[in-house]
Amino acid sequence: MKNLIKEFTKGIIKENPTFVLALGLCPTLAVSVTVGNGLGMGAAATFVLLGSSIIISLVRDFIPGKIRIPCFIVIIATFVTVTELCLKAYSPVLDRALGIYVPLIVVNCIVLGRAEAFACKHNLLRSFLDGLGMGVGFTLALVLISAIREFLGAGKLLGFTLIKGFEPVFVFGMPSGALLVIGLLLGFFNFLKNRKI
Amino acid sequence: MNLQGFLSIFISSVFIYNVILSRFLGLCPFVAISKNTKQAFAMSAAVTFVITASSAATWLIYNFLLLPFNLAYLRTLSFVLVIAALVQLIEMVIRKTSPVLYRAFGIYLTLITTNCAVLGAAVLNIDMFFAGGKAVAGSFYYSVFQGICMGLGYTLAMLLMSGIRERLELCNVPKALKDFPLAFIIASILSLSFMGFSGFKF
Image 1: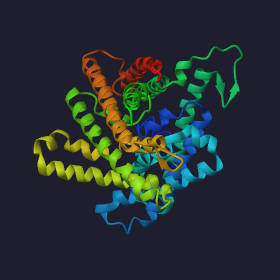
Image 2: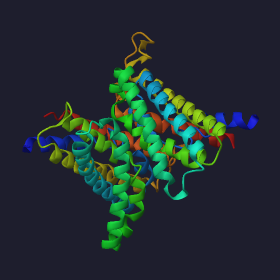
Image 3: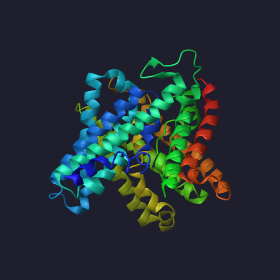
Image 4: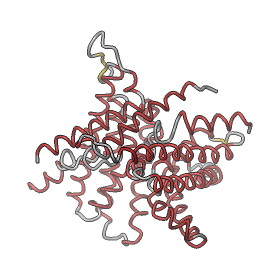
């Protein structure tokens, strides 16, 4: 039981896909302008991660080793297409905000990385927990980055103004602000890691 | 098909919406392989080559296969597979015809399969040059040209970055910022300077 909980929690802090493994940074940087977008992207990626982890761990015994990567890609692409169509149908605003980064979840290294490193070697329950943990970790990282960017870049959080009279720093809403925030955050996490030892 | 259209595609995809610095596509190799100018150049040459070829291939597939049969929703799936197959094919052809070239960017070619810049370029082409389920006039040439330009933008950013990082190897930087964090901060400053181009309007 303890092992199972560990499978879930490791994705959140110890092996956080964004800050520790540095995987899947493209969508992280591009859509993190507002917390709403960050949450939407996180939810979409979590759905794809969960779905592909479940299916891959179910069919892992039937897939020949040589063609496993193309098989994984087809499974992942199917879930991405489902996500794309659902977003278009139920939330056109979010779909427009996320733009081409929704189809790009297919080539997100987190999803393929988890499929290759975890789901194809473990049973259904473990793969499910691993996928969920990684998805939550990714979402939390996105929310952290987008909260910093939205607060500094627009003076708001989730669309609400926090401090009256706060002069926003527009550059944080721009691409260069995203790179700066992630660089400093990665540095900060390195600093914490070094200090513990 | 006019000169102005091509010029505006060139300026916007090389400078204003640079693949790496403004669209954030292909960031992983940008941070991982930009420590040395030679490697960075080989990687970006391979990327440019594959983006151009895949822009043409995905346009043909979308226009002649997916659209007539009402399969536009299979776009993501088919593009990923086509790009993966295309990369394998290019690798085989290069290995047979030019061992020198194969040694120069052979290893990078396999990495490109999951490079988001390639799929991103294909999806962007479809979004930009197809209106209401039909190809815009001259859209094939525009797509291929935009592919080439995005490759050039990638090369430009890679070369700038690797030049800067080669110099920084010898500098004394805070321990926590070494490698990845510093690379992102440099990229941020580069991207800030590229923002100056966004004043150009056509």
